[in-house]
Image 1: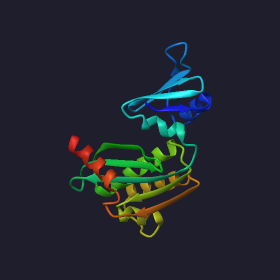
Image 2: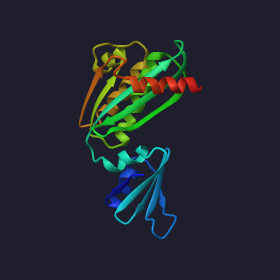
Image 3: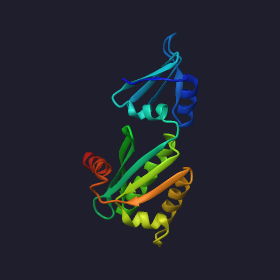
Image 4: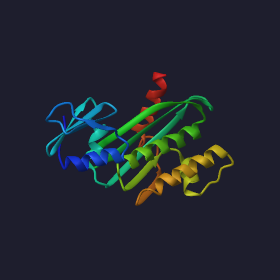
Length: 197
């Protein structure tokens, strides 16, 4: 159960800026409480206690003040098109600070790859990082985003614009194609989401 010593009002503003709903505390000693995913943050005087099965959902928002993150994402479709899912991971010097996965319906593999990248960048933005180094195993997506390849698919063009808009919110970013083994955790999350469906 992480305990973060901080200015609890500044912490509250940080959570609200990231879209987390903050409510009044349940007792006289609690200043406020907020929940996200499987974590609940409870503020007392000069400290926030995070409870729940996955405290990383809130801990990264409260601990990081900008900083650099490595972002991994993946999209998978069984069939092309077919049932699809995404997975993403945010890693800092402290290890994995956030990850997520979900089924996204029926689509192509390339669209799933883009959707995974969009969700990962949204998460990094919401966590307040100002520098991201993105690594994905979808070479086509990397080359399209970098402008090395074009696409005739209007949906992929729209996703590429969304990715550029998200990247422009960071002070610094890189986008790199890596082998699947380097992207193993995001790949596993996407496939686990598919298996659960």
